[in-house]
Length: 447
Image 1 (cartoon, rainbow, N blue to C red):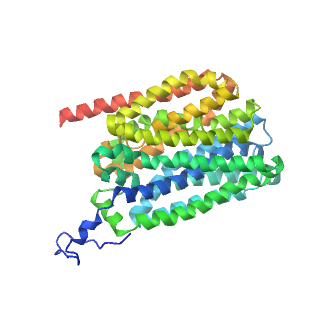
Image 2 (tube, rainbow, N blue to C red):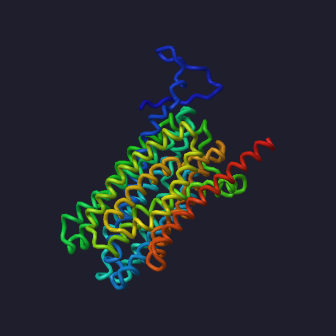
Image 3 (cartoon, rainbow, N blue to C red):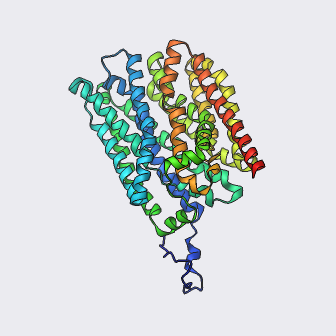
C-alpha cells in the first residue's frame, strides 16, 4: 500500500506524473479495509475461544480441584466473565491513550497486553502446586485480557461501514463477524486434536497450554498486519475525514446515551446464543453425558463452518431486506429455537449434536448483522466511541455470564430454563428494535 501525503485544502494542488491529483488516491477501498477487519477479528476470537474452551474443559480441574465438578465449573465461568466486566474499562483507558498519543500507540499497547496476558495464563501453575495463588494469577490475567480487548478497537469496522457502497452495506458489515466462527473453528480443532492425542494426565498437565502459545503467536502476526494498515497516511486521513476519532465518554452518554443502550440490547439475542452453543454445551456434555469430548468438539467445528455460511448469508439477506429487519427476523428464529432447545439438549448424542448445528446456523445469521445495525444512530462524531462501548455493553449484558447462567439454570431448575434464557434474549432484541424505530420516527417528526 502506498503512502499518500495529505495536503491542506488551502495548498495548491500537486499533479502527479499521470496528471492526477494525488489526494484522489487517498480514498481507501472497502476491500482493503475489510482485510484489516478480518485479520483483527480472527486473531481476537481465536484468543477468545481458546480461553472459553479451556474454561469449560480444563480450568475446573486445574485451578479448582478442591470443589465438586459442577461447582468447579461454575467458579471457572465466574472468572471467564471477568474479561467482559473489565472490557469497557479497557475501551475508556485506551481511548484516552489514543487521544493523548496515537491510534498506533494504542493498538500496539493493547495487543501487547493481550499477548502478555494470554502467555501468562499458559505459564500459570495449577492449584495443586501453588494453591490459591494460581487462582489469583488466573483472575489477574483474565481481567487484563478484557482490558486489552477493549483497547484493541481500531475503528476499522466503522470505517468499512461508512465506505461501503450503500446497496452492499449488509455484506460489508458481516465481513468482520466472520472472525468469530473462524476463530472458534481453529481453537476447537486444536483442542480436539490435543485432547484425543494426549493422555488425560499430559493434557491437563501441559497439553492445554499449547493453544495459548499459539494465540500469542497469532496476536503478534495480527499486530504487525493491522499496524501496517491502520497507521498509514491514507487510513489516518480517512479516519479524520469521517470524524472517526475518540470523544469524551461523558459527552457520548450525555448526547447519545440512549442509543448506546438500544444498541447493546438490540444485539442481545445474538450474544446470548453465542455462548449457549459454544461454551455451555461443552460443560454440559462433560458433566452430564458420556459423549467423547474430542468428537463433540469436531461437531462444533462443523457447526463453526455452518455459522460462517450463516454470516455470509446474512450479508446477502440484509442487502435485500435491510439490516434491522434481518436482525429482527433472526431474533424471532432464535425465539422459536428456544422452545426446542431443551428437548434437543436433553436427548441423546444425536439430538445434542443437532442442537449445536442448528444453534450455530442461527448464530451465524444473527451475529452477521448484530454489529452496526443501529450504530448509524450515532452519526459521524460519536460513531467511533459509540460503536466501541455499545459492543462492550452488548458482550457484558448478553454474553459475559451466559455460560454461568445457563449451567446454573440447567443444573438447578432443568433444561427448559435454558430455553427461557434464550427466549429472553430474543425478546430483548425485538423490544430494542421497536424502541429504536419509534425513536427514529419521533426524531424525524421533530426534524
